[in-house]
Length: 115
Image (tube, rainbow, N blue to C red):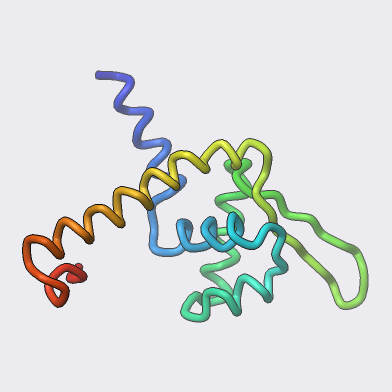
């Protein structure tokens, strides 16, 4: 049973409203500036985006590159280590698509997208 405790470690990195969305944007677009991420995720606040990026950086999932220029420029990208999450995220996405199809079969289009 002790191996299941490690599952919580993975969840800590992925769980939350914004981390999966941030990761999705970075996987899809490659390197992005802070302002680009903010525009890509319009409902997130600057404070929350900063916090989530710092947590992902701490876990070595994303890399933060600071360019010392005026105005300051900061870019974020998925690390080589973070790339190892690709199969996991793809599997979660595939399951989500299949689950929506399953709910659609059970309840029809209108009911399948309920959360």
